[in-house]
Length: 280
DNA sequence: ATGCCCGACCCCGTCGGA
Image 1: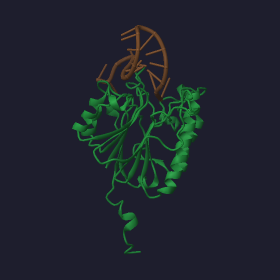
Image 2: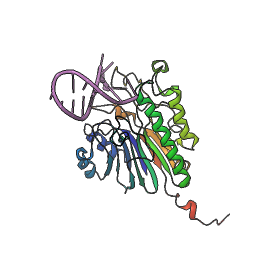
Image 3: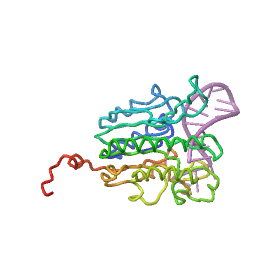
Image 4: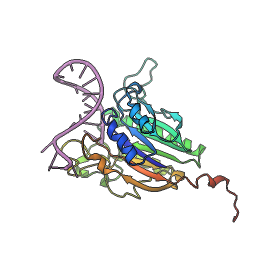
């Protein structure tokens, strides 16, 4: 099974590119972020014609997450337990929940498409929202792992964190900025402390996943590595290959992010629990 | 060439992105 994540930066502006890439790249399941639309605006037809079903969570022109899959999806969740909201308090005093998380199960693999809040600036309320959002996601992940110790899980998407200084082209440019601050990096490492791991980095040690549209960032290769597939131990065992599709930043009307892809070998997974220990 | 920001909104400026 070939699984990918891609911040598409508006699906309506890029549906042709995304569907062409899905077919050309032989992708089974794609988690998308920043679809920037609600369900009534989503271009379902192009996906259906290519053989993909779509589930999505989109509330308005901001954020929005989706899955396209040519394998059956079930157990769809459009939030995680405890997910913080942001903005103006509603009548009941709670903050509005944004469309930043979508979970599906495909072939017993639990997948989340995540769009972690940007943070904006270190002194912006959005930064504390980002840290709280990650903390609650980690707490929920800990609970889930305890309840499903052998089921493969991947948290994939735009994490809006550069975990290492080498994940940005020039660390000095980011002094005092979000994405590289120690609290953000600690929030990211908390997932590793739960047993999750970036399953792409060992196979693709270098390379960025995002280049700003401004200031010739892509031609100069001034990018950031902020899109990750974080797999549980059971997921890590399945991974046979990975790639960052840098070519998708080229050409007409690209997203500012590129797809990140992993191949999973599910052929022996079901044997683990049930096979008799003939040679035991 | 991979080339000086883009998308969504609603009006042609503002917000958000990282």
